[in-house]
Image (cartoon, rainbow, N blue to C red; front, top):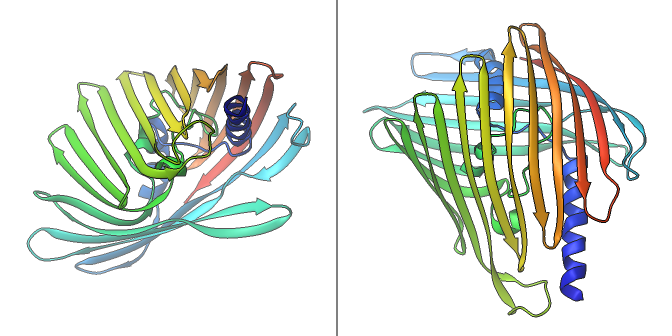
Amino acid sequence: MESSQREVQVMSELTYKSLKDFKMKKTILASAILLAGAANAAEVYSDDTTTISLGGSFRGHVVVTNDDKSDDVNFEDASSRFDIKAAKELDNGLKAFGSLEVKYKGVDDLDTLYINKVYMGLSHDVYGTVTLGKKLGLNDALVMNDFSYEAGAYYHEESAAGAGTEDQLEYTKTFGGASVVVGLIDQDTYAIGGTYDVAGLSTGVAYTVKNDVENTTAGLPPLVDNSSLIVGAQYSLDALTVGAQYQTVELSGVDTTAYGIGANYELGQAHVYAIYDIVEIGTVDGSDIVVGAGYEIAKDVKTYVEFSSVDRDGADSVETVKVGARVYF
């Protein structure tokens, strides 16, 4: 009985999170959108060895939903942010770099700016890259069926499994079209993964485990190992890109699994996309559906409309329409 209650509680928390905290996530397409803004960031300082740049995006949307945890219509900021990046060329092919990202969040009528990511590192073409600081791991880039602006299945990004935005030491080494990523979050938490790109096909896998976590589910030992796994694949051919993902996270004996497909089609300055995910949270099954379209009305000015439907056994489906815009700088 207690285990069932725990499953329902986890389902409720994850469903609410997926609806209230929709975020644009970084699949290959979404990364391209973000990098387009970053590439046009203002270079505020430069000399023979050092560059400092400022970039970011202003984001807003109108939300219409039947979610009983929210007003029917909301006019909101949609996680506007800015970042400062620095890079310095050192001797013998070595480069030092750093990045700081600050985001806006409104909570209970209070406006808040907070540091979302901050890290520094050293990179070398031969020996790879070492990064230290607060950041997302490789797992964030592997929801490869997500072509949306504010949706996508990110159930695997759980700090309780060491798979959220974490302080960590990360090492990355590339070998042609392949890469290996190893992360150390703390003495009991580590991550390992890799990617491979060839002829329009991109694949990746990431696994994170957090050992000796205090158990919150009856019937299990006092200490358990929480874990998160995601596998993604994406293929592009001309204007069409299709993607698939499988993810599973285990928290105190409760398993959450999501797997799905998605497609995006480019139409000049516009694109249309659709995503379908099957979700299993403990003993509760459900599905997430997203359909949307985006249009770049001018360079670095993007608009979109996005419909999502979240359905869970034993609960009414929650349907949401978001109309938004972003200005990158």
